[in-house]
Length: 213
View 1 (spheres, rainbow, N blue to C red):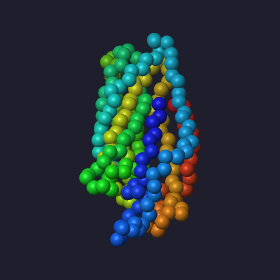
View 2: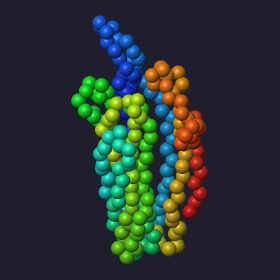
View 3: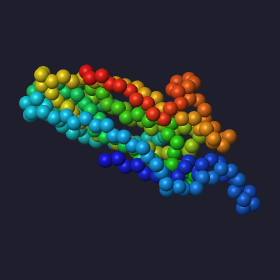
View 4: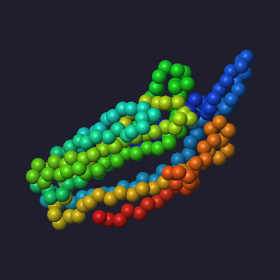
């Protein structure tokens, strides 16, 4: 399932100065109306017991902040069925939750502009005789300096896929790019860096083809 929740804009949308009872600055009210265009791509894998097996791994839970410069990474193992010739890890699910960082009132509203995120798993080693797969994982949600910091709780759910020699399995990776300039934003929050440095072109959709292994 997919769970998306609405939160306040960061710091109510910008700076807010109160002078003699007058609010000066950019304040964006809470708006419950959102529009999502969501596409979910999925793959169904199955087979006879002698050809294919799968085992859900333990959920990985990590915590950090939106200002952490390095991802939360590490390694873990999944024990499946012994005797299968090939084993590989797949990402079954992932998620993250923001929570209040610090005690200041401006941190009460948990909406954030997300500057980047990554959730990934990769094979490290596999023992056919034990049915044991060791894999690496990495999780990160980063927020830009223009918003207040936030605590981040990470969740990653891996799964072990095992195949016999007649089956073919392998890892593939693909990289895409999404970047949107803040056209029309007030002067203090303008961001227009798409297409420069390590940023890709301005686009809200990217399609990357992945060839079969």
